[in-house]
Length: 346
Image (cartoon, rainbow, N blue to C red):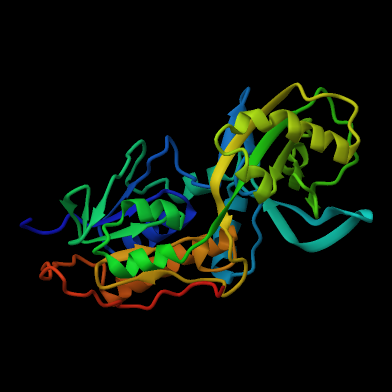
């Protein structure tokens, strides 16, 4: 292809992709976001049921990074985020106990509203399925200055040309686990207040959240997340798991009433399987390919935001993504990594 590359293409409009795009745009780098879904948000997913949002992806977020705290203060001032609770319940073989921890934050309009706010003035195209990322780099055959893939590694692997060796190797090292998230609406609130509950050593449940408490409207709505093992057996037909999830939740909380409505959402790639490591990181190589997300640290909303922010910051300041004119190397020429992949230790 001839002429000036069209700018940086960010694939994926979750919080990592949006944070990266905002950093690039603020540095004067032309950027375009392509999102295959109908809305932005990624795994900070909220869905409306009879006009009321429920969070079916990330359950909450915590804050420890000073710059992320500044972003959160902006959300809070806009009425988009609020402090929820610093104490969950924990269920295990010994029964129920309190589990104090960091302050967990929630969003009255759903966590997706936070990503929408960050993306409000960025060029985002939704319902745009990308099929390939090739050397050059190119996106679906169109040359661009650079490409950022902000998505789980197994999804990125489907797009990357094998000639893009550093990025292909980086996503190939990622391991992800699935979950099912179920929204259960009951006739009335019959449970003891608990906010959220970690469910340990359970064959089916891993987390249950009181969405009425989380949202602050007192609705009789619970959201349950299943274990990896249970989800793996129901990825083909997630809706068929609804009766088992409902029964497990009712048994855990001793609820006499059946749910009026149950919706089950499948997350094939819910979170990175490697839990631990540095709180930030990203991948950026000489092929003009960047990777960002919570696979490069602990699986947290803050990690994903920092990963995208740091990638955008490093790339724009280092010049790798700023109006790159690339000369295609001869076939068989190995690529160099401009910046070693930084990721959680296994």
